[in-house]
Image 1 (spheres, rainbow, N blue to C red):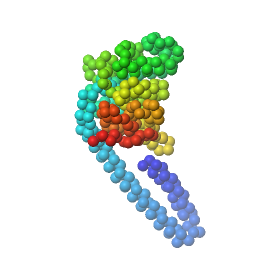
Image 2 (tube, rainbow, N blue to C red):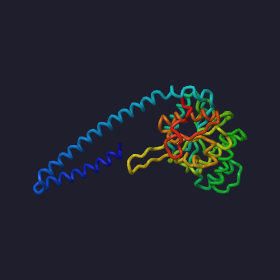
Image 3 (cartoon, helix red, strand yellow):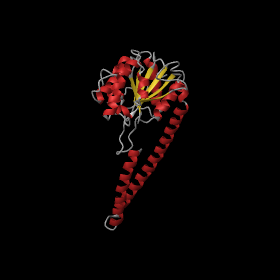
Image 4 (cartoon, one colour):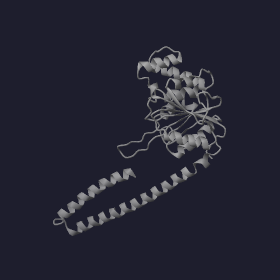
Length: 310
């Protein structure tokens, strides 16, 4: 609709100039030509009015379908993840609202929410002090920001997969490298059992730590050690005129194009819409049967929702 308005402005300018030309040249252009041009202008005006009316109808219909989806969202996923433990990871700076909406959808689906872990901006390791502090916490040599962060990713993934038990998540919280939101009062995500837990990793283009430094390698490493238990999700934006292009699959895109990682996890690139959260619930359910897929509207998406979404 925005593109149409852009062209409408251009057309209006053209016909305004044409109208001025008609007014000025009416004395030298024969009346038959002027009449012909006036008829064409009226025809264009009628078509524009008709297009505006059709656009208004389509917009109204779209609003109704969006309202229907929101009102029916709980019923459409009810019981699909009954008793399945889910732990959510996100990176601070990203849009939190879609993640909050996803948690509500997971709760409606019957999942056992273990909480949400937010990686903080300290993991950017922009200064030597943070890099040294993280290295000491991990018990590794302070070899620079990126190697230390990758050590953290490897050690945390191993612990989440049940291979080790060092309480690393709690240590990251104590050192302010992570913040943890419990799903329920008295439940500590850093202390609960992770056996059988399915993991959601969320990020977008606004995350405080670059996706290639944290979210992408973390999701890939976790998918490698916790097989059939990882879903990567992100909210995006559709194009809004020529000056605001679409932003889609900036986080999950690299996971989809990595031949080693892509077959090990599922992804969703439109978490800002109900259809994305719907896809996420069913994708998590499919992980329990070893089925993977990439869903949404961005590059690398094979379908809007899983085939099993029925």
